[in-house]
Image 1 (cartoon, rainbow, N blue to C red):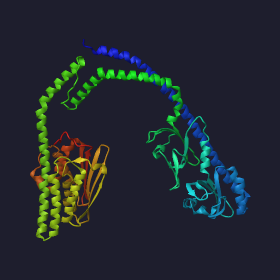
Image 2 (cartoon, rainbow, N blue to C red):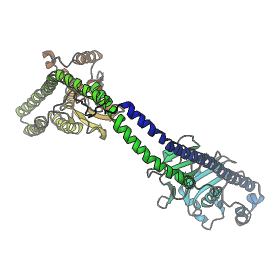
Image 3 (cartoon, rainbow, N blue to C red):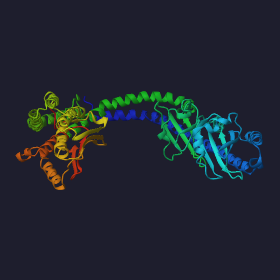
Image 4 (cartoon, one colour):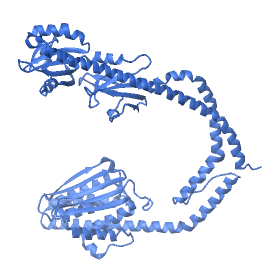
Length: 587
């Protein structure tokens, strides 16, 4: 007895009830993980703000220290030895995050808590920044940088009013101790690492696995993190490293110094506590998964796969793929539908096969005829130049012309008549330009700027040479100034562009309009080039190229011409990402 679709759907519906177990297990896991992550994210935000508050307290203590020093009599009247003892005994013990204190008078070091204070002003980056300190009572932040007295540090500097002239007090931060203090703001309830970033998102301080110190350039660098992650004003973000590690970033920006305090949490590590609580759910999920696999396979074999195959075949036919057929060995309604579909497409293929074949052959013949028109035109000009050089007795020039012509003929005759890559076309074009340099020495220079992504793009053979020939003969040669010929290519979002530009004689607006009218007339591929256009090299070259590109790319091809009298001409060609091989399939 033949089974009908209704019976099969009933059986499958019964199996669907079993999938409720999977859905419930999945819902429980997602709800539990989301709740856990939300709690951890909120706690991470609190920790980041707490670390930032500690950083604010440190910065406020530094500012208060500046004020204290500026108002103390020892700062105004004390000797260097007395000031150093004051710094060491009364100030540094109460500033755990300050490494050294220095005093500058008139640009020279007057006192310092460092044993190698003599090397302080030998640090180029510090000396350069000290020159920018002009206003009193403002905290200037310098660094991070490496100095011999304080190693890798950031310096807070303030110019203080004094009756003895300019005095600047410097405080070098003990970044390792400050980092440990910020890291200690978290508790055992959250596991993460902290990094400090400056205003440009460069690391000020951090430790593995997300940052490390580079001993060669004496600075910190990010590990596995990308600078672009920290663009924008986000507070919390999820990112994935190149190694597949999923991270949760929580950022707080310090308004006083502009640093970012960034907490980095491993999302996988956050979910580990949840894994211990859902072992039973996973076991139940495994059983449900096996049931789901069986159910999915049954649906695919009995209903979904045949329906999808029929639908895909119908879409293919609607797109013009009339050779599509459905291989479906069934005895139900779907099998009967597939048989009628195959019978219908077979009749359609039989009706249009001859018409499609003849149309394709006509397109191929038209394309080859257009391509062949270029060759005698170029060969005539070159042989004429060789003849003139021979009559003038310039035998070296004749030899060079013949050599370049041989290269051109080798490319033209031996290469396949089908589409070529831009790389091949450029190689042939360079040989042609060498030939033109021999014919017109010192008349023009040739430059190229090619996007490497365009070198393997396809275009008809012998497209660039006629366009360059137009620029040379109609733009650069008739002009009396030093000529420049430029070819450039770029890749866009929907295709690629070719630009040919010269600074030669140019054309009037009227001449451009007539030339564009000719191109519009020849947009119909069935029209032939007239005898009047054959006399005008400028027209035949451009019209020929226009028609061949239009045949290959169809509506994915655009051309634009710009020119100014006595200033030059620019030709822009826009091509689609791939040629329309349906219109130009020559095997």
